[in-house]
Image (cartoon, rainbow, N blue to C red; front, side, top):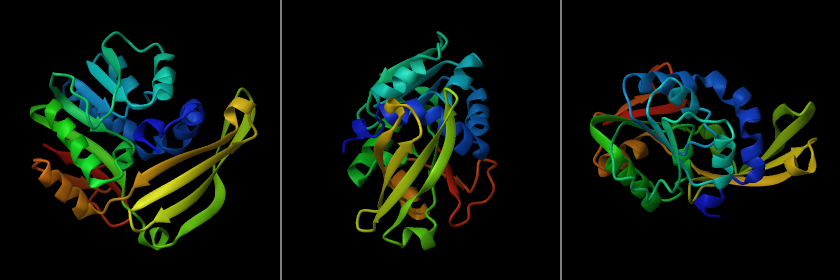
Length: 247
């Protein structure tokens, strides 16, 4: 699997219906919106279908969204984004837009698609290329719950229920943990919908520990690193979210 393959048509077309329920309650949309309101322009790497970036652009802030998935960007473009939002098909490891941004973000664990150290450092170098002096880099990853991550994996279980065209669709997930690589493989299975919204899709995510993140940021030249345990910026504790702000 390559990074470009992470989000295929099935995940892209069901993304908004699933994550409006699963992720919006976390408060991440409001967190990134408030950061953007401190001043643009804003660059979001891994913008997906625009769940985070579109409200920022509609507030009149100059935005650029980058994603490696054509399928996700097609969904984003179908939402009639405003003229102050540019969408770019690109790779967050190699991107070079030739301009700077006051805020660079990688929301909702997209950095975890960087599965090895070389990709992680390439991505962070990309962020530095695009970050204006004094600007802010913000991203989030999950902090692994050790009792769950220690297991070889988890059998298929119902992961989400949502509606499309008046039909109830169920998403099931099977998880495999690769402890050697620190990589989770998740196989999603969709049932109950039309043929184009049924079947399986797979993603892989690298899990990180707090000081691993801090070490990567230091190697990449970032300073003033702040780590929080939630989007309300509560103190970080093991097993919580990792919300990271750096300069």
